Length: 56
Image (cartoon, rainbow, N blue to C red; front, side, top):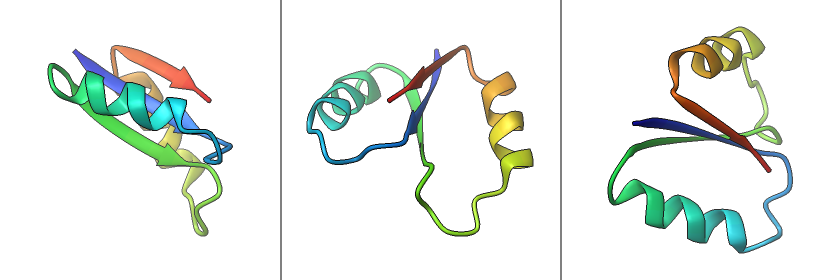
């Protein structure tokens, strides 16, 4: 399964722990919304190309 994690607030450890566990069995991609130069077109493509999307 392809899982996309969209992180808005990276100050909490829980997302990183869950991403680590999921990456052992699934293909995981992480997008940080705070990243400069983020392409929203690319983000939309990622959302539709993954089986599950989690927003933090």
